Every structure is written in structure tokens, then in C-alpha cells.
Length: 492
Ligand code: AMP
Ligand code: ZN
Image (cartoon, rainbow, N blue to C red; front, side, top):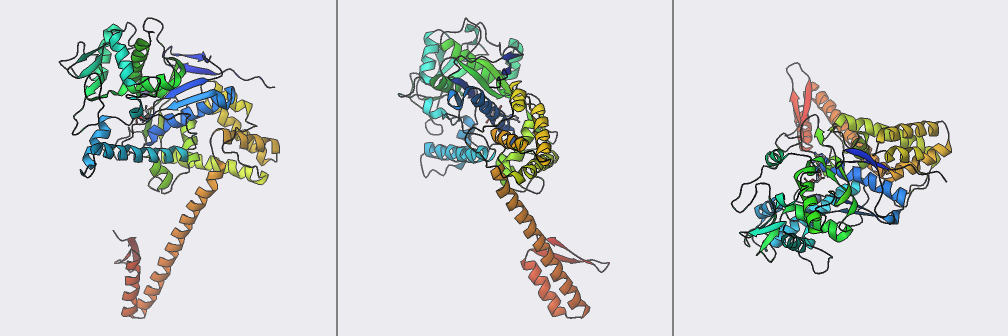
């Protein structure tokens, strides 16, 4: 048996690459902060989904598929959700139902998106609202808040409960920020009920008319954002687990606050800062060199890339998006360009062409058997994808030269990486069909324009007008230019 390479992961907590040693190799546990479901996920949100899906696949390969538990939550209680639901609300049903319809619909779209990106579903996908106050879960938000109050790490004031930041000696270890930086970074509200400006909200009152809420020892209200991940990870993975991950923006304040809550609630406040052994953060994605934002008009959703031709004049198979995402090391910033998508589509097409003569059955769900050891070694070094990619290229060229062994290894490895060969054909056929119908459309227009030119030459104005109207009905507007030529454009 080939000896497995040692897995090393960069830990934000220690700022070093460390050898990974699971607390329990029979149950490797990972938590990734998931989406807030008020709007379609954008391509930046796809980055943690894809990167940590590859880590999930790698862990399953190294420890066995049944020995890894991956939790990615759904944030379905949040003020952005409340605002969006309130805007849409026609008062025909209770606001809570409006909120549920919004979060259900956004979550269903998120599932279509991540399935389209070839990501495996996590083992558990808890919704925050199921963990506010739950009789059936091992822990929940209300019980953690009660523990924090009892242990002197939180206090209730004016319907709020706040985490008492100065009560935790190690607060700020993950982000390594000074208190001044943290105050500036968090843009903290200086509310009269706060003892310290850094104290953050665990619970806040809800207006029953306009906001969702739960009965609690502190009155009718709802949780702050950070507490939900302490509750869901605590309930599903335990008080300490192996890996906690998310985007770089979550280091502070979100993850810092999760650590504070979990460690202080479960009696670990005086030990080394933990909650999870390894904290991993993906770098940020920019679009064509700029920060993605609605106002800049460069806001790209996963769904638009997968199903419309808004970017680069065509839709993109999930495999192409996935490869484009993985090519940049996950901790580096990524610049998302249509050009890069075109290049990656070419790479994938070349691989599939190299594989085609071998007719290797695809293996979408089962653990692929002949995964390249070089690729596993590369990924085991903090998900280093470049050497993995180089090896895939060399396998493809051996396959092109006729090596069935290389072809089998390439097929098995791309299956392992979630680059789904079986999805490609259907997508590309649809794309080619569309291109073909576009061509047919152009040919028809040209033919009609030629007939019209002939009718005009014969001074048959009635026929010329009839053809002009026929084109207009097809959405085509003719323009007779001064130089005697005729051009067309789509009717606006
Ligand atoms: P949100 O729904 O904003 O909480 O984000 C869900 C996940 O996407 C979090 O892990 C974020 O860190 C991550 N994320 C959001 N925007 C980007 C971006 N532009 N690049 C990379 N990751 C992002
Ligand atoms: Zn979280």
C-alpha cells in the first residue's frame, strides 16, 4: 500500500502550516459558515463552497468517507432577511410566513447553485432558526446564553443580552488585533446598555409586528448573528472539533466572537484559544479587478453564470467555474474574469477529448478508486492546487499518447475533484445548439435581406415592404444607409 502523505493545513490561529491531527480519526469534524439566505449567492460565496468541498473530499479520501462530518449552516435569521421580507410583504399572510418563503426559496436556489458547481452536500446543513430554542437538540442558543450569564461572561440589559468582552482574557487572539483596531474595525455601536464598547449582542428584542422572535428569559426577541454558529457547531460537532472555516472577512468579528462564546460557555476560557483546532480562511474574490458590488454593476451570481449568457456571451458549466476557482491558491485573492473562464473551458475540453477514446464510466458519487497520488500529495500541502494541475496536464498528454493507465487515473482524479465529466456533454450540447440556432437565425435574416434587395432592384416596393415587416416581426429592424447598403439591428 502506498503511504498516505501527511496532511498539513495553514491555521489562522497560529499563522503557520501545521500537521493535521484530528481529535478523533474515526470522526473528523469540520464546520464552515454558510450563506445568509436573503438573495442569490454570488460567485464570491462560491469560493468557500468549492474550496472546502475539496477539503471535505480530501478528508474523506484520507480518513474514509464515513469518518468525516461536515456541517455548513444556513443563516435564516438576520436583519437583511427581515428587511427584504418586509419589503415584499403584502400582509396577505403572517410576516413569519413571508420570511420563511424568502429563506426557503433562497435556500432552494443555493442548493441548485452548489449542485451545479459539483459540490457534495455537507453531512448536516442546519438552519439557525431550528437552534434558537430547541427541546430536541443537545444545545441551542438560549441555553448557551444562559450558561454565559451564569459563568459571568454575559449580562442582560434593556431586553438585550451582551457578551462581556473584557471578561475573556484571550479575546482577540485569532485576529491578533489591538482593542483600538477592533473598535474601529467592528464599527461598534456605543449603546447605553453596553458596559464596554466591544461588548457584542447575543440576544436582542424583536418588534412582534415587523420582526421574527422567540420567547426567552430576556423577553420576546431574536439572537445576534455570532451565537448561532456556537449553537449549531456545539450541537452537531461538540464543544471542540477539528476545523472551522469561512471567508477571510469572517475572522473578525464573527469567528473571534464565536470562539469567545464557545470557550466561555463550555469552560475553556482560561486554556489555549480553541473551539476548533484549525481555523481556515479563504481569500477574497474580485471581479475584473474590482470589488464586487451591486452599484458597480459587476455583481455576478452563481446562477447567472450557470444558466444565462450574460458573461462572455455564453453560460458556463459548473466544472469550468470550479476549475477557475481552484487554480488560484485558496488563501490568495482571486481576480474573476471572463478570459479566465474561457481558458479553463479550453483546459477541460482538452482533458475530456483526451479521455473520450477510452470510454471510462463516470463515477459521480462513489469514492473514485484510482485517484492520483501526486494530486493527493499536492492537496495535502494546504490544498496546493498548482502541482495537482500540472500532474493532470501530464496525465492528459499521456492519455493522448495512448496510455490507458494514465486515462484511468485522470478520469478517477477529475471525478474525485468534482469536475463532473458527465455534466459537460449536456451543457456543451445545449450551448452548441444555441450557437447553431443563432447561426440559423442569422442566415434567415441574410436570405430575407437579399430577397428584399432584389425586390427593390426590381422596384417591387410592395414586396420590399412585406419583407421589411416580416423581419420586424422577427425583432429585426432594417436600416437603409446613405451609401446604399442595408444593415440590421435587434429591435429595442
Ligand atoms: P455571507 O452570506 O455574506 O455570510 O457569506 C457566505 C460566505 O461567503 C462566507 O464564508 C464569506 O466569507 C464568503 N464570501 C463572501 N464574499 C466573498 C468574496 N467576495 N470572496 C470570497 N469569499 C466571500
Ligand atoms: Zn459562523
